[in-house]
Image (cartoon, rainbow, N blue to C red; front, side, top):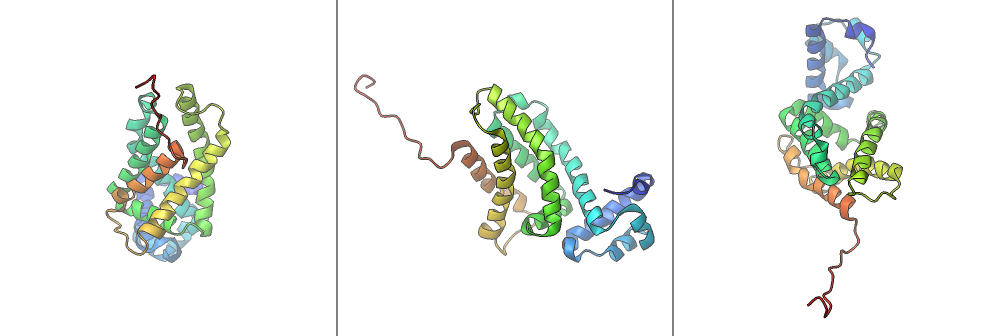
Length: 222
């Protein structure tokens, strides 16, 4: 988390540093991003950087948090009236809204792309653990609403389902990037292109893999 000295900066200077970081991480990814280039683009001394952040990881995680806050603008139309959507439609709309944010903010979208492409890196693991802590209560709230509306089996183990929801998200993007689009990803169009894979995940959560048998008409019903 950034130090208090960063939050005490004038807004214009904070935004300049964040803009420089977005450009750098979007262009070079986390591993190859350079603090020297970031401070040069932001017009600050390198020593000042360490007065604001512990290190590059601290800055990167701050930017992920900022993108999450900005995504709320896209999510809010859906979340303002959650009772208008069943659980599975709501899941789909949440992912669709998040992908719309990435499409409209391509630099942030590219950073997200790099995270999902490199899920085993230590930085991703840190972000992933933070996401799990934040997403748990959110998904639990959605499940409670769905159970109260009779959409989800009240006998489920909510902790298990929440665990699956979080892990399936990462697995779905991994499937898309590693299997469907390995080495051939359009960084402009991938946010729209990935939605069918998201729908596969949602359909799996909704229906499982058991063959759904159609009822057979009896003589009394014919």
